[in-house]
Image (cartoon, rainbow, N blue to C red; front, side, top):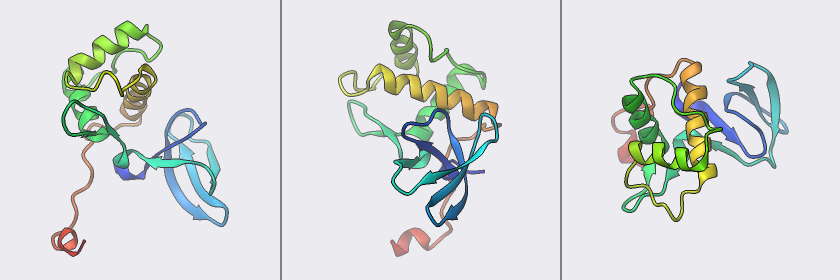
Length: 140
């Protein structure tokens, strides 16, 4: 399973694995409980590989943030997303000191830590997107 197959759906808790295309959207499976459902075509669905975080410089891919968290925690779960806003901000600053404090909100930090913990429980240990086959990047 690759990070590009993991989806976040607006209004739905947790993360989902892409299963198949359906006539009315996509069929997804929850990483938390394995429950399958149809995400309608009107739902806002984002692949984690397409999400990035604001920094004071260039934006950083969420995969890179997850890699930093993994290295910082030694492969263990991170702070609880239910911690106080001050604790969340402090923990996030340890992992990503250059994050943009004006544009990254506490809710974004909560999601980041929550998603990381879900991925870790699902067996993820590497968060880099899959490498493109040689020549495919040149064609774009």
